Length: 123
Image (cartoon, rainbow, N blue to C red):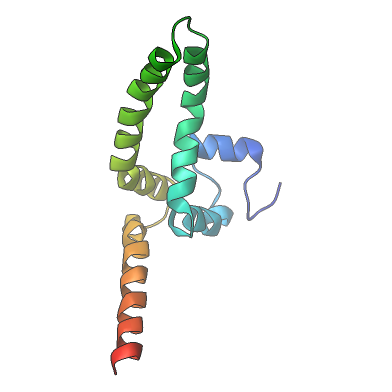
């Protein structure tokens, strides 16, 4: 296993809440604040629900009933997952020994980029 990237078992432990070694803090920071962090978070959150959705596909009945059951699970699940993204990211940052204010780093970086674009365009 690499000192800068977690192996498969370390990554599973990381996703379940175990801290990674201090040598991997740059990877954790990039994972939680880098490009695509929302997409990674949503995909990771949906993986445990997939077996339940597959099980609903095998329940006897019409297609719209099975689809409705799946929607009754997936819509509130996605709602709460999106609502709690900052809490989850903050928890992982603190758990791995990083500053919790890095959660807002992405927002500040985007605001700086927009301000810089505005200045370059209208000066």
